[in-house]
Amino acid sequence: MSAVGLAATTSAPRGRSLWDDARRRLARNRGAVTGMVVLGLLVLAAAIGPALTPWGYDQVNKTDVWFAPLRHGHLFGTDALGRDLLARLLMGLRVSLAIGLVATLVSLVIGVAWGSVAGFVGGRLDEVMMRLVDVLYSLPFIFFVILLMVTFGSNFVLIFVAIGAVEWLTMSRIVRGQTLTLKQKEYVEAARAAGLTRGGSSRAISCRTCWGRWWST
Image 1 (cartoon, rainbow, N blue to C red):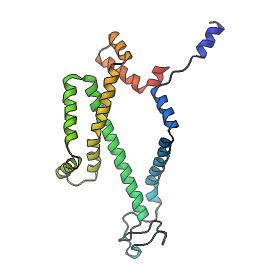
Image 2 (cartoon, rainbow, N blue to C red):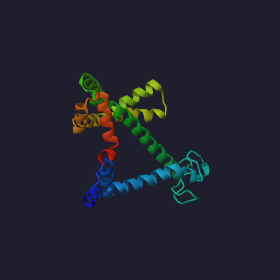
Image 3 (spheres, rainbow, N blue to C red):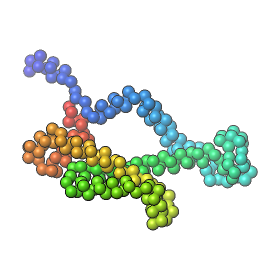
Image 4 (tube, rainbow, N blue to C red):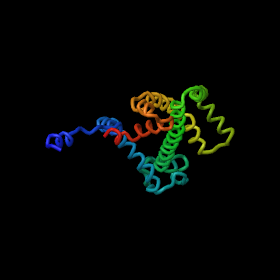
């Protein structure tokens, strides 16, 4: 190979995947980076904070009722039962973050699976699945929670299930729309023209979407 050809080969620009573009946009967004830092600090406080407080969040002390902040070691004071407000705040933060995390995971798993199947298969199955989503959209959220509590009783895990079981509806619509868009891409048409079956086309979409770094190089 000549020196000119070698130089042209070595200086060829490297393609950028969707992950690279997303990371660059995230790094340029100061608000998003600041939010990530704040969220990380909140997660750290929720993870180790309750273990560092000298009082338990449910520890009752009748002699420390309605203490003002910074009195007798209570940084945030106490409530009517003498419970430390800082310990209760950190425990409440832990519960809130756990609810958000579990509900998001539930909605992500159900929504991605539902929307991708509906968008890729299409036809009557798509119509039935999305009409079911519309029916669930029409149900009030509080009615759904009350129905679950009446059926299964009062349970803390029920909050996770109720929120996750409703939040996946929007995710399914977003994923369905993206799947319909990906079905019309050139590489999918090329895969079909090469003789790939529906399963081969789905693998092409998955590889191109999830592993765009290697496809783009």
